[in-house]
Amino acid sequence: MFKIKVKSLTREIISLAGELGLKAVAEYRTPDGTRIDVAILDGEEKLLAIELEASFKWFPQRLLYDVVKAHRAGFPKLWVVTPFGSSKAGWILKYAGELNLAIKILSPEEVEKEMAALSPTSSERGEGCSDPSRRAFSQG
Image 1 (spheres, one colour):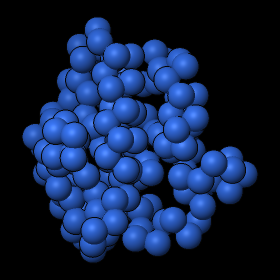
Image 2 (cartoon, one colour):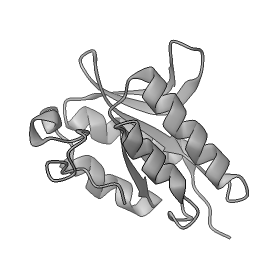
Image 3 (cartoon, helix red, strand yellow):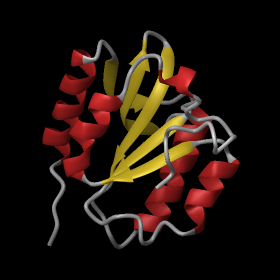
């Protein structure tokens, strides 16, 4: 059985964000009362919502909920960290695109590499935009 160590991974993400000069907020409370596992901010600008998903049984439902939460909270990007991959994501990835929400499904091992690639000026590279040819942030 695959495991995800939520507390350890949360601490790692917060540390990596700090090294990049970004602010990471664990259990970020959204205006409508939901929570995002980790929010990455550049000052007051919302850069990235990160959700840590450990349940395989309800993964499609959790993924859809994560997309809705990130979109409603005003985040342009969402990472869902899970050991299960994206095989059950299906139409939800397309729906995120319709909302103009860039989404990545990552394994816990990929987080450090992806965090290193973040920068406060990522919006200048066209990330999160609706034009796929300009979007450096892939949806896969």
